[in-house]
Image (cartoon, rainbow, N blue to C red; front, side, top):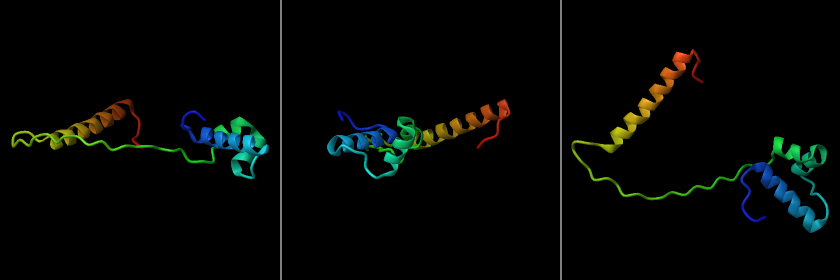
Length: 98
C-alpha cells in the first residue's frame, strides 16, 4: 500500500489483500466472509472497520486585546447569525429543522 486507506472499506480490502498475499488464503473474519459472499461490493456497502481520522492542532497568535472590539464576541455573533439565516431559509422553504 503506497498511502494510508481513506475509507473503512478500503482499509478492509487492503487488510484482506495483504493477508492473501502473505498466506495464500482469506482469514476467518467478518470482512472476509462479506467479501466471499458479496465480493468487493460487500466490503463497500457494509464496511466492518471504522474509518481512521487524523487531526492536528496548530497554534496561532492571539489578537491583541482591545476594550472597543472583542473578536470572541464577533465570532459568536457570526455563528449565531449563520444559524438564524439557515433557520430562516428552512422556514421560507417550508421544511422542518431536524
